[in-house]
Every structure is written in structure tokens, then in C-alpha cells.
Amino acid sequence: MNAAEQATNLELASKIATVVNLFKFEFPDAKSDLKPWKNDPETRELVDPDSIDIGFHFPGISKSWRSRSVLIQIRFYQDPINNLRRAIGIEVAGFDHRGEAWRLSTVENWSFFGESLPSGEVGDKLKKVCRQILEVFNKQNS
Image (cartoon, rainbow, N blue to C red; front, side, top):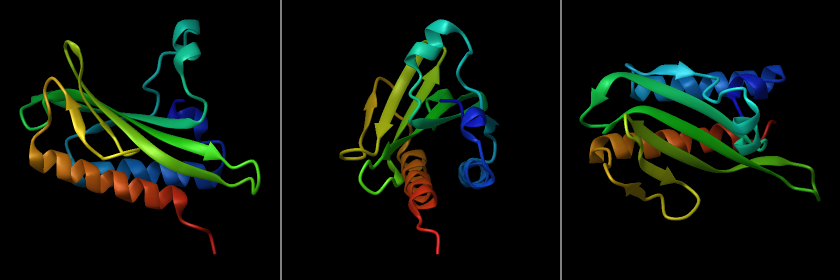
């Protein structure tokens, strides 16, 4: 679901802003997009209400990224027993003019796959950002 729609309280809005800042710290040329999904019936059917989705766009096509846009989907799970909501993983996809060029999932082995993978340096930075995002959303408030 679009990050702009998920920012329903100060805590969530602050965490979403932190995610944007973490990404932009590693990739300063990126422009954030808190509404990467269209608001039409077909798209709404596909949107996961248990995710926070943020897009990032780069000027031109980067050879190290092998893409022009990146979609980050932070996936959540609400535990019915203790009612805690946790980030359980992150899906990241890179897009170029043909569509999806590559994908990274933190759910299993943190591997990239696709036709056109980002450089090792970009991949390492992106994995670092993903670890930081999981920490942001799963940090217990004291």
C-alpha cells in the first residue's frame, strides 16, 4: 500500500521518513515517491494492505543500478496472539523501460535475481539499507 496512505499516525510517518532518509543517504540522487501505486480499481486489487510501499526514481538509467526506478515493499505481519505488528521482510524491485529488471527479497537468502542485476557495490548498499529498515520497524519502544 502506498506509504502516504499508511502514514496514519506520527510514529508511522516518522518511520517512513526515516526509511526515505536511509535510502537517500546511500543513494543521494534518488527522488522518493510515497505514492508509487495508481489509485484505480485494477491496481487497488493488487495492493497488499500489509505493506508499506515506497518508490525511488533516478535521473536517467544508472549502469550500477541497471534500472531507473526502485520499488521497496516493507511487508508486515500482525500476530493475533500478542497483537504486535512486525516487519517480516522487504521486497525490492528495480525497473527499467522494459519493466522489472531485477528483484531482491530479504525473506530467504537475500539474493538478487533477474535479467539485469545491479552492481555488487549497489547490491551491498541496498542490503545494508534493508537491514536498517527492518531495525527501524522492529525496534521495541521503551
